[in-house]
Image (cartoon, rainbow, N blue to C red; front, side, top):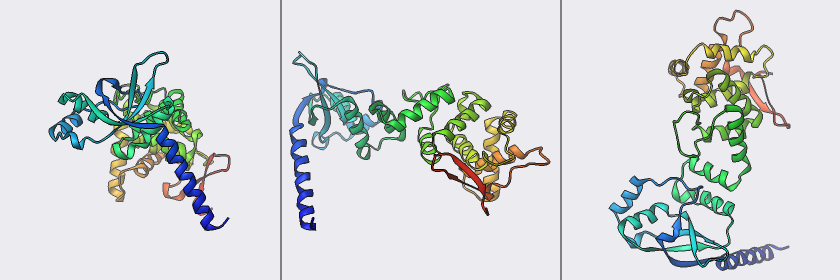
Length: 303
């Protein structure tokens, strides 16, 4: 097929998509009382609503994105807010009765949650906002990370926004990055290690510890003299605050930025403390790779 024919075919496909989209949507002024927030949405932030009210201008509110929910056998229609929750609340508090909206028709619940995530570039949603919506949409990776957290960490991700509460883990983005970089098996072992050491104490379930332990395991887990029980016992002798202070000191003395490397160095030092032989080799001498089967193996840098 020539370039000209490919262009025509692409244009035809795009035009067909546009026509289909137009048939599945409509514009209307919708009563605020008919709108509602679905579980995939983040909670309302009154300070954000207050900022909208302070500079209130109906002409600048723009168009909300809604999903029409039709109850069989009823003439009542309800509209899930896909984008515009804070504008809707500000309008309601200002005394406005309705707002203009682009209304999607025929969406499933998963479709709604997926679109909510897609609008993140406009909403500036946090990683937690997007993760919650992806769970509601049935995203396989999000569900897998959530399940691993429950099974191996004995914790719940803060899907109800109870951040900092006992039994909750806030490092959603970090857990998912480890899942992608190292695979589910290493994330599972990271959770198991932290749980053995500090239980479900929130102090031990921070970004720094989750990343640090994952990086440590990736480098040393397949080292011939590594003893996982020693790591657990050595960490049980100290508090999370002690390890954080130690990693900060090492980062400062070595001119490193705070992060996973600093905590990893602290973990190596803690593991080697008191050993006369079979110490772990220096952090910078170890590298790792994933096998085609998804497992992580480590080896000396000069191998």
